[in-house]
Image 1 (cartoon, helix red, strand yellow):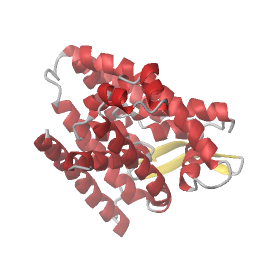
Image 2 (cartoon, rainbow, N blue to C red):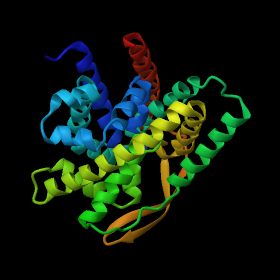
Image 3 (cartoon, one colour):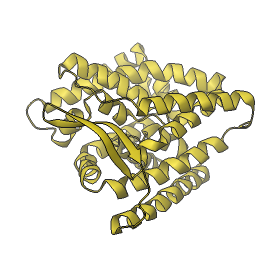
Image 4 (tube, rainbow, N blue to C red):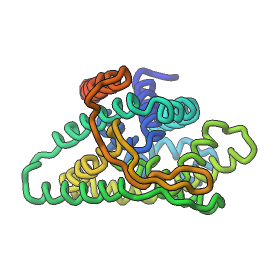
Length: 306
């Protein structure tokens, strides 16, 4: 029977799924601001070969003793539901209405930085500031990477899933952006948009297998750092968010590009703010504010439920 908590977890998963579709936005950030990040890490880190064996043999009694099924099942359904149902819409918005769309995500990410930074008990210590600087440098370096042309072989799709999911569970690093860098964002989201096209289910399946492998292995490492070095880890993640913030700035002008196999690859961009605001620009500014406030509404709701 579905209760209120399961429905709420489903909604949080749905928001995570939307975020994971957008290059520059992280589902891990949504998990953090909605108050489920620690539980998500602990749940995924508990997955091992014995648990997988229990799932394969349909021994759900043992499975339920090791992980909270009422948490992970609605969360997974929400994430997958958003990805499958909204991939086409998000693709349309980014390609045809980029300025307002990025405006919304700029507001979301900006507020997320404040929410995560407030969780730091000693945010002004030299160690915390050093970790913020390190995270910022790495985050900015990632945004400067240029998308490359890569193979469509299944082994590489598996690698993309493994690397992409590692980024997705880190607040601040966008798995979708990593896929963009690896040259497989359109390829994978294209399969999600049309899952019943020839070969699409195979692509989704192999990518999902890579995601599962990366999720199980990396979550254990991240869970260790969150439990033993939480302050430093969180400071590092704040830096990552700050470093990648430019990637969601709505107003960008391409300064250098190259055409590879009939597709334009952006090599560099300059950021600007328009002097004369169009209707889309005004909408973008409004969505920055809406996205900013929405994060604090989410956080307040999460704190109330906890």
